[in-house]
Image (cartoon, rainbow, N blue to C red):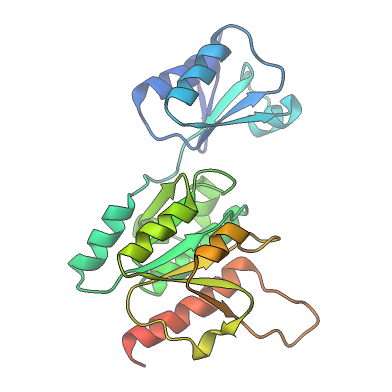
Length: 250
């Protein structure tokens, strides 16, 4: 008999995942054990493709571990710990407050603790929303929710298919896009007034080349020690507070 188990934000088992996909509920991704292509697995794959849901092929032992030894039948689905918003909702929220938009864009942040910390700092700094890509970026899982210490309940997070085209759209709305990366102008000497979006890059690779090319300005933090970069959430927090300071006129 198939087990229908929820382990934090994980839905386990073929029937359970099938019903989840039919329900129209938001799904982060579907995990399928490598080599599984029999029976209802093919229908699950087809439903994911029809709905643009990311499929990840994982080692069966890894899936066993994630499902705590439960009978997953080769498939599990991650559901978000919080509902996603849209970019329009983020912009409308800024407008309702009579403020120029302040948005944080995460470019392939892979660590749940980093995303949770960024969300927490963004909420404290008065950001109106966060944008993340659908692929190669951690989603709103329970670790993100826990690390945000409640901030996720107040922060709008939108998930998009293409960051580069999203940046183009924001720029058309008079939002300047700032890239946090190496070899840029000093963060404390940068004018962040008006609508702004801050791009924070991957923990190891930084901001992707195409995304960086789309940005208006690159800003950097000085490194005085032997390491050449900061943790993504730490760097994000420092720059976000400078943006908040300027917006508050302090």
